[in-house]
Length: 575
Image (cartoon, rainbow, N blue to C red; front, side, top):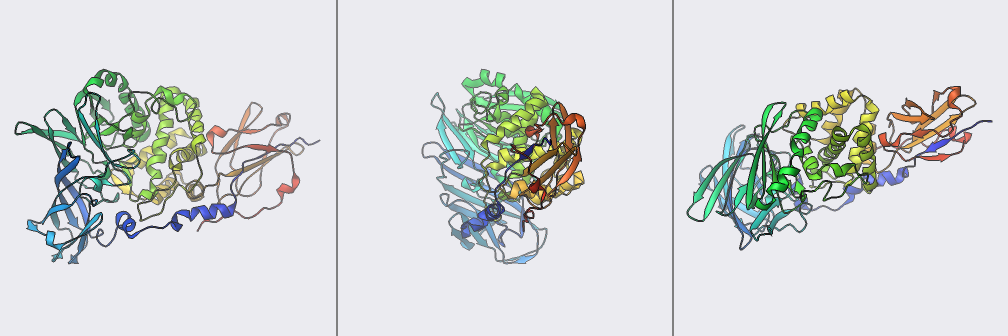
């Protein structure tokens, strides 16, 4: 008598998946969304080289006044072009000087944008300078960092405490800029923040000056030497004390600086001992820390956290886990501080490698979420890492595709975190060679060092590096909400394992490891039934089990049904 087990992992119907792929495109977007999210004719002829920002916050009125000087080059010859500056409408522009000449009369203001029609001819590669003065009351964040804006608080001693968090919403919430991820100032930025003498101002990079302004204020100037995305430029003001340390890394000595509220110094000294361990782990997997020229800082903030380049926002209350909780539900995440690990992981994926369009934010969040898995492995071993990755799946919604709509500042599903991490975990186990996987991660950071990229560039680079056509793999996990369906049948009479993937995009495949008894074997199913031989000694063990912690699958068991070997509906095609 044949002893057979059939294991099936269910997916959504093909028609449902197709409609979900198009869901973002069906949303209604406005002209403002296009101005914010596209490289329009007002943006495509110039390239930002440097921001010089000077700002003074007023803690009584919760307002700002400041100036920004943009240095930029012309990328194509043009005559009387329109130049778009992004600044949200609660911040009126008070002055505008272009190459030494006032140009505010050439400005038109439309909600969150200022359009300057410049009455002259420009030649390619010419360096230009635009200085803008502004003042007003910026948007306050209601639930930073998710909604974005400025966070005005007081610490427990009643001292003013201010921080910025503006990813998605955009840096134009607090200073004039070209507010698009694709254009980082190649030569960095200078940020000067003037605050009362009882407070300190912290920004990105290195503190180069602290100059007294009369008897009541000090201007702190910070220099960023690396390209930096505008949403990563940060302003933090508080009654800070500074802790200095260093890390001996792959590129030499890296300064470590921690800015914390004065009464939290002892807690910080203990909690931030995790930083060198984190850096050692991530340099092993990802390559050298990308910003040795600017140092590494943690800055205590009145919100949970943010990956501000070289000045990581920290608000995890000096607890391990995510505010004391483990997002994986396994307990593995309670042995490290989520914000230190996750937000620092963004220094490689998000800050070093930045996507041109927020629709591709999976490049930031999937890899960074997977950095949690890798840190768990560095700290607790590979089995713990497998458990942590598997535990993250409980938060996967499969609501809409991970990829958002392009050109309108629209991100896709929050599944870019947990599902994206499990996609990469599946890819890693498909490779079945951790040294090759580590080489891939390091090569990504070296090849796209300090660059902005598209998601497709990253997909193609991975395919080329691994010498595999991974387009169907990425389509499956990034562009649909389907979970791949794996069907297994064991025919004990013929000593055959039958396997295939169904209800998936055409060409989808990944390596799968299964067990029969205490024996493991690997196979790579396709969209058609394929046979893998088994031995007579495998037959008594009729409960084969896919090692689910290694691939993103659900497993259900069914009895043998020979009719299932008949051809099924063709795989789904994504246009």
